[in-house]
Amino acid sequence: MTRIASARNAQDYRPMFVWGDSSALKAAPVFRVCFAAATLLTTILPLSLPPELIDGDVEPPSLLARPISLPNNHHLPRPPPIMGAAVHLPDHIWFQIVQYLPALAVRDLYSVNSALFNIAMNVRYRQMSFAYLDNRMIRNLVRLKDPEVAKRVKVLHVYPGFLQETFDREKATPPLQRTLRYCLTDIANHLREQKLLPKNLNLSKLGLIRTLRRPEDMIRLMLDVLGALPNVSDYYVTWCGLPGLGPSAASILSTVFHSDVRKLSLDISLENVQSLTQSMWLIRHLEELHLCIHYDYTDALTSREEIFRKHVAPAINHHRKTLKRLLLQSWEPRDMSQLFYAIEHLPALDMLSVSIPVESPHLGNPEGLTNFLNRHSSTLKSLRLRATQFGGAGLNPDPISFDYWIQNALKGVTLHKLRTLDISSGLFPVETALSCLTHFSRSLTTVCITGHYRSYEDVEEILDILQRVPRERSLEKLRLGSVSLSPQLLDLLAASLPSLRTLELVVRDLLPHALDVPLYFRGGHIRAFDETQTVDFFTEMKTHKYPYWHLRRMSLVVDALPSRTYYEQRLEKLFRTCIPSITTFT
Image 1 (cartoon, rainbow, N blue to C red):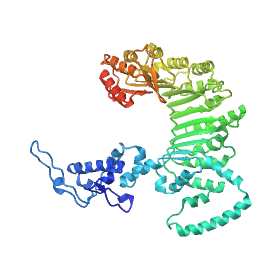
Image 2 (image 1 turned 90 degrees about the vertical axis):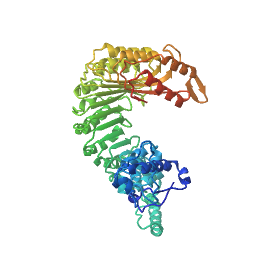
Image 3 (image 1 turned 60 degrees about the horizontal axis):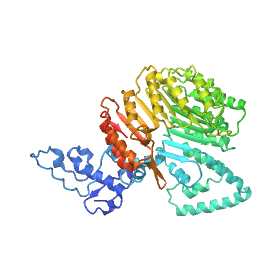
Image 4 (image 1 turned 60 degrees about the vertical axis):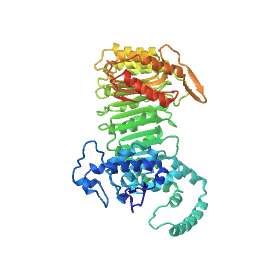
């Protein structure tokens, strides 16, 4: 079976099949998968699909016009091949086919037919990134000048390093030499390009490079390209450590705000916030905001407080009707209490994530966070707490000071509708995490505590808190890690949480008994479990059954396994046998 012919354009391009030598497809496994699936559908679907789904010069009307009746135990004969007939399948069938292919392979299927052309182009250009002025960026700028490509961009990452490169290059080139030499070069290249390049090619890669010698040329080009992206929904901006760009970078970065941006991530220095937050008012339906603040040059407390009150908080308050998820993070331990005080009530906010530096003063006055939480007690359903250590004076974590800060921040806080508590950080002290769980346990239906290794005794204490505190609702989802998975640990979980629906475990090792000490071997650079303990775990688990457990979904993330593929399959089979209620296992 080989693919023959091609249409004049992608819209009319459909696969055509003939029976014959298949050597060409053997050389292209990705195409062979798609063509095999299409051929299978071609052979079967004419018996059930209406005629309008069969697109070609020859149709088998005898099969489509009347029902087929066959005697018992009679096999349906294979329809004869239709030489030269083009097969047109609905787009959703092609979409289902590519679900079984890796994304890198789907990117190269644009020449098969119109349906796969659109799918491949969406995969190729769904996510774009601009950071440095290299060949990749030039190529992407050329392609995005085409509106048919620009409309496919959904996720955009921008770091204005390319603008800094342009400024540096201009400073390194003497003005007089640049003016005379480059003018003559531009004229010569322009005349040469008129002869060599096709007439319908408006902008070549070489031509584009020659237009980016001056910062104003780069700014104008980026404004044109980014301003023509109509469907960007997720926008990620990184703008820190680049002094002197100011209004130039702000004009480029804010161009995308006119698009349908729903998620905005700003990894930005406080000095640059003033230039960008004024343009955030252009976003119409912002639903999610990630804000990570750096302090490159602003050290004065009064300057920080003024920026928080007059620029950052008003920009957030402007989106109070639509903002549902807010993530706040300080790259260094600095006082952000004025920001918490200045943010008004956000009636749509249901998820808050706060990253807290482990060094003092953490986020400044803890009462700022206390007031913010109480202000949103009627809407917050999910709270995520992180402990971070990216920058600071000495990079020395202070767990006692951190615990004291958390205790004061949560003092007197009541979140009536809180359903999810997520504490996922290796720097978050175990005792502090247990204190937070105790504080909010009454209304929780989802608990996620990961980062530190949790011994059997730690898990026992977590479950004791969930049982000891009077609860308004039963726990539905639990994620823990990392843990040593043993039959006794599963016995404990099943007995303590019989109504649990979803269990996710980050597993460090498999032990046949909770009191065993994990044994490892090292083969080359790989650290893996001792296979003897793994085999003993399976043997011991065969005697443990949980018919009363209502668990529906189970997920295991195992750090290391001997013969991973083999044991992953055995794990699924084992737990589906031990816990009959499981419907999904990953």
